[in-house]
Length: 217
Length: 217
DNA sequence: CGCGTGTTTGATAGCAATCAAGTTCTGTGG
DNA sequence: CCACAGAACTTGATTGCTATCAAACACGCG
Image 1 (cartoon, chains in turn blue, red, green, orange):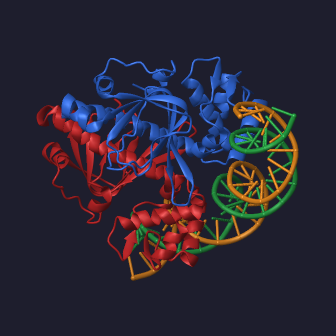
Image 2: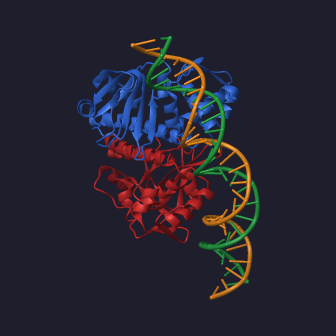
Image 3: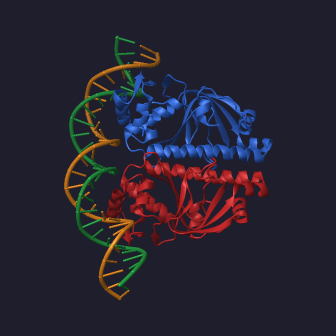
């Protein structure tokens, strides 16, 4: 159920898996417009969400006012799976998107606690993996390497030859723990010698994959 | 089951919780010496571990040779809960420690898949929370704030008035994504004006909690 | 066509990495 | 109990990267 695979199609298709059935059976389809909040930090966390199309980002406000990005979600991803009573993150639509929304209680009651727990364990394990990957990404040495790796990650979720960044520069900066100016400079630099080329602000091509991969290390 | 609470005693005591029973019933007690590997990166992940006494760190080697610290575990913590077939982290004893080790298959078979899944879901949710907290810590603005926050976190897990760092400077540096020199300088600086004082290299006192808290923000 | 938002570019300053010695602790053996 | 060796840690000098402050530029939309 890795998001990478499912996202390549840009639209979610259920896999042959018990967890998928749960959201399919109990989920209600909702549509959100660009910038809309799907849920807010501090709201009760009694629902589960699966992205069907579009992109969603989850963020968290630190005390010092910094905005920390938890993750960018692609079609097929589950999100909002905090076990605590209240959401520790806020989820916003990056562009228009469709989401399957299901009540946890209903899934547990009607599908059985066992099926639900198994479903949650799988989803949480994947979220944990992603958080750990994010940690390594943020810990990378240079700003150039961070941005290069992000581009590669985005490209890996899409079918080439042209790739579209679902987020703006500020979101990239928050995700990588950089400033928007630095991200912008690195993008410029990657075009000069990093093996990629931008067409407009959001679309890019990878001209030399090995080069970009080398820069990202 | 938060590690913070259980760790205050420095020795694990079972809580009134299904998950606890699982490790109690099926776990085998093992002892490790300082520096010993409890499991290695790439090893089969068919066991689960709960720390009884001592401290354990989990690390991961990035391709570029950097050592990324996943977490420091205190008594009561579960670790090694990767869902993948192989461990993505390596766990080492920081000083002598006791660990309860249980076979996943045995727990699922004899306690029931349901109980096991529920157990895993809870443990994973907690690990995810910790990973997200770690992400925010690493993303903090200044080195001084990072080190101050780490000291507060360590102190929060122990009973005062003196606190003991279970890890050395290099481990602190790897955890915070800093160099050992910078950590050392920040420790010096925190003593000058951060409201804490070191007695030896590993023991410290918090003279002015509000001050340290202010520096950590 | 112009306004606003989002992005790029430029100049500068500050913080942490790096390179390089010192210094203090710890454990071991005399 | 002390001396010693090695490891862990601290301190210093310098460099380099990224943040910050400031301004120009481009795209999207009415």
